[in-house]
Length: 401
Image 1: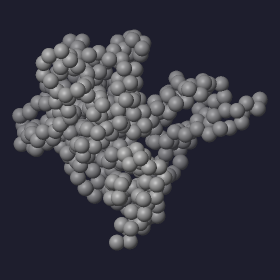
Image 2: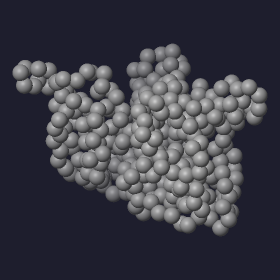
Image 3: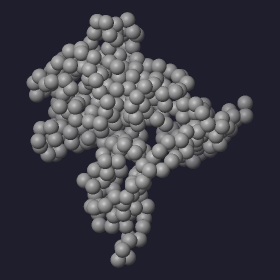
Image 4: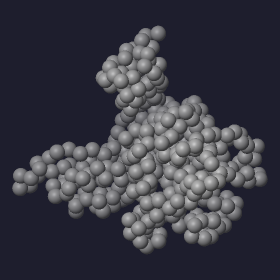
């Protein structure tokens, strides 16, 4: 059974609400602290409170730090950071390499949106509200939490954007604010008439960047439900973001996938890394490169992208903008996937997550998560292959019991 996350955005979405819901659904706060602790100045910490919103209990994610004095909360919150400065902070964290890449891809996407809104180059953009420390933690923390849950699929409801005006560093702006509206292009939205900003740029970025599709709650066996609280307690409506964690049921799953390809023989190799980051940040399912021999006996690279069929124009645009390619092939194919789940296995060196693939309920493959093995190898000072061997033996022992 493949793990699925469902985002209920009936009260909108904000970064702290998303992260609070993921923590409430089971992501360990201590694991988040270990991954993001280096982002915080001395004396600061990540915390979670229990609150109620219109009678519904929820988790309120918070960053706690000094409230006054030089270098205190206000000084850090009002810093205007460039994308390069934000990504330098993220790269210095303990996130996995894939999470760092995805988080930085999100910030670059936001910078591109801001640049378009304000008619300036990406290099000139200084992120204001989303450059604040709490928003950086919200985005990087949510990327970490979703990676920790390791879903096969993320589905979201239409987003309730609210109404009225939002207070921003540029002054009052109509809801949804221009950057939020740009991030929600192609996403189903509505308003319940409440005169408040219910979707922030951070919330729009996280939902649209992770969702594989939109619609009602899919058929799933629910394992956990998490509630993340917003700042306001709106009378008559719970101001909470809700996430369902569950498993799809059935023998495997069949869907349609888009395959896009092009060959390139006249581009700097440095650009291929950035291209992969941006394609993943925009929702690509898989991106891989293959060495090929091209016309005039030139070595080249075959770029292959797997995606949802509806992502063709968006991802194709990224390829044309970021590369020297002037043509792109594409076709839709049927895809059959094994049911997958992630289980945690206790080993003598510490817990390791395993991705287990099943066919008709029988486990046909089980592989330890490399990032978990690499972390334990660093902690214990042993080769990663030894950790993998110990973890695999622990999984086999557990399966025999």
